[in-house]
Every structure is written in C-alpha cells, then in structure tokens.
Image (tube, rainbow, N blue to C red; front, side, top):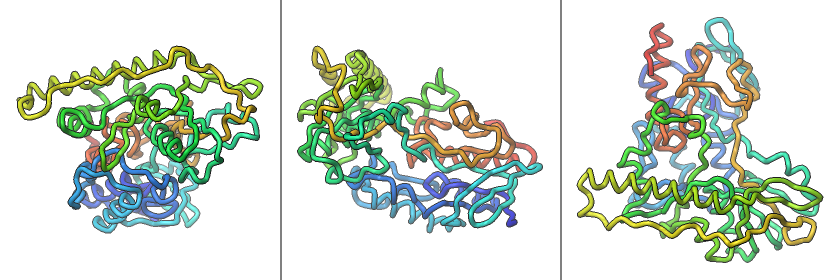
Length: 415
C-alpha cells in the first residue's frame, strides 16, 4: 500500500485547484483520476457546446485566460486545453487511468482502494464532481419502444437523432440549447418545462455574469442564504455562450417555432402527461429575473455607474399559449425521440463511509464532510453561489485546504 498525506479524487478543474492549494501548503498528495485530465469534458459533452461564462471568468488559482477574446466563450476543445494547461502549470501529481473502487475509514485516516492498487492517507478530498451520471426519471422505463431515448451525456449532434419530432425534457441551460440546435436542424421540437432560471445574456451594456460578479451575487456564501438546501437545487440559468452573445430563453424558442408544454408529470398507456402549471412556472421565473435586475440596478446606482451604462430595462414576460397541451400520445409517431435534459446526479457508490444522506448526497457543512479529514469540492453552491463554475472553485479550494492543513496540525480553524 502506498501512503500519502492527502488523496484528491478527480482531476477536473476542482481537483486540480485543490492540488495547487495543497502544494502551496507543502502537503504531499496525489490526484486520482479514472480517465484522463478533464475526462468528462472530453467524453460527455455535445459537439457545439460552449461555456456559459465568458472567457475572462475562466480562472483557477494562479492561472487564468490569457487570450485576446475575453468576452467570447470557450468551446469544449478550448476548455480541455485550458484544464490540461493548468494541470501542467501546477505540475499536479495526477494518476490517470485509476478508478477509485472504495474509500474506507482506517483509524485516523482512510484507505483508498483503486483498480491500480491501494493508497493510505490522513485526508481525502472528493472532487469527482456533482455531475457524474445523467439523471433519468423512473418513468422513462414505460416509454414505448418505438421512441428513442437519449441523455445529454450521449447526445453529440442532431444528426444522430431520428428525423421525426423530438421531446426535450428540461428547460435549464442544457435543455434550451439542445432544443434550439435540434429545431434548427429541421426537426419539430417540444420542450417540457419545469422550474427554470431566466436571465438575459447582456444587460445594460455588460454580460449578465459581469453584473453578478461585480454586484457580489456570485460571492454569496452558503451560510448567508435562508435555505441552502433549496439554493443547491436551483437549476442552471438559461444562458448560452455564443460570439453574438444572444439571449436564449423560452420566448426565443417559441419565436422560432418550438412548442412548450408543462413539466413531464407521468406516462399512462403511452400517453405522456404534462403538468398544467406551465404558466405559473414561467411567471415565477420572470419574477425572479426582475428581482435580480432590481438588485443589480440598486447596486449600479450605489456604485455611481448609472451615468456610464445604458438605462435600466425590463424584458417581456414569457409567452405561454392559452391552453398548452397536457398530453402527447407517444405511440402516434409525433415524437420519435426523447432527450432527457433532466440534470445529473453524483455517483458516490464507492464511498464506503457513513456520510451520505437518504438521497445519496454527501452530508457536509460548506464542503467539510461529516467525517474527520474528509472534504467535498466542486459541487453546486458548496461555499459560494459560484462554486460550480470554473472561476468559483478557487476560493472554495483555498478555504478548504486551510481547514485541511489545520486538521492535520490538530487545530482545524472554523470556516
């Protein structure tokens, strides 16, 4: 068994950021990665995907975007190059092709069993990400065999789909992007819309991410919100990264002929059933967008920016037809493909330590796991609203590496 002070599981941007922070604190460690550096970006993304954050926000501890297009959005290939470049920059001690099979407590430390041997350590950082497996509702098992089903992990381009109608289930960032792309390929698309976050791409002359960054929205801490459990379940915003900086929301989709129905609620005798709350769900998203813009406007006024930026504006409410369909017969041939854009779930099946809740999520307090010497990194709103973004993980890694160093020294500070 090989021994090291700390083991980091996952060599994505979160694991590499933690590696940099541990190295700065002279804590010997290894980073275990089941595939290659940036594995999920290489294998589980569709061809046309771009980051929904502008290039200037692509930054990790000691490293940032250095190109000449700060307001553009990285392609998948560019993201892979960025993360690989960071791994080389920090000389991360990554063991690639190493799948973690079990993590078990062992005295005052842990044993990490992998398909390449066993490691012993005092501290573990779980940075395998919160998006390990596509989440598909159980009702998918009842979909007629004549309808092809595909998750966003397996989707690459419209050409792989049948020529007929497509039902996209989910209206967050991924769902609306795929609906737009698939519809523009000549297929009729229907989107099943549940809870979503509506945002303009550009507001008052700046990218919405610029405003949220400057106004402190993205730096809100997990211990400053009223309901952190709820906050961690908020869907990703309806944003798309494009050189034209377009706003892609439900109005943009219906404007090109995409149909909207309510949340996918069930399936009976081949009939897909949809919630009747579409209008209310859209009205709530409109309301939350207005509240955010109100907050930005207030901050702009307080910061003295009003004379230097365009005037405040508000956007038309989401258009919903008077009587959206409550069902679609999946045996009629109208729908030939269902794309499940219903989010992801982490896979902690290898974590043989009693730290998982009844939903299989790691129990933690701002990334400090309910087991001595164990930490979580890279998940939604871990310590800050920006935690799941590339630019957000650095502050979290710095905080948690400080706590880890204190733990090793026998004096872990409060965070």
